[in-house]
Image (cartoon, rainbow, N blue to C red; front, side, top):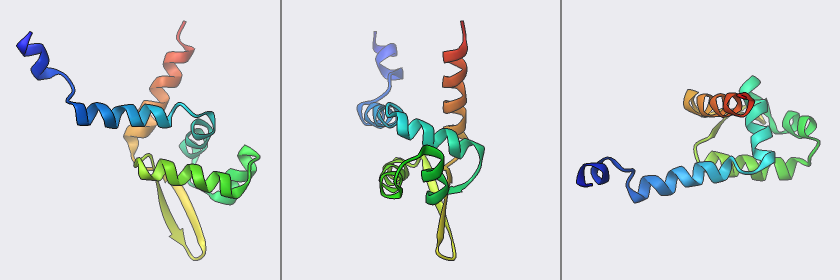
Length: 102
């Protein structure tokens, strides 16, 4: 039992992992991640794609940014969002593949 306990996820890491899955539990955030999986987009483009107001999109992006799921890049007055790193893409794609698996 001791060897199992030593290899278990510690509580701080378990909390972080739970927060990541909590972020993925919202359909709007899942759609945002799915759109950003395709290419870097600005808030306006995301609001058109998801048919939502820009303030609602910005609120969700801020949440995702705080969890390091998305990152932003400013070009002039426009802010572009993209997935933070390849791990997010891998998690998302693997989860989609799991859902489609019979």
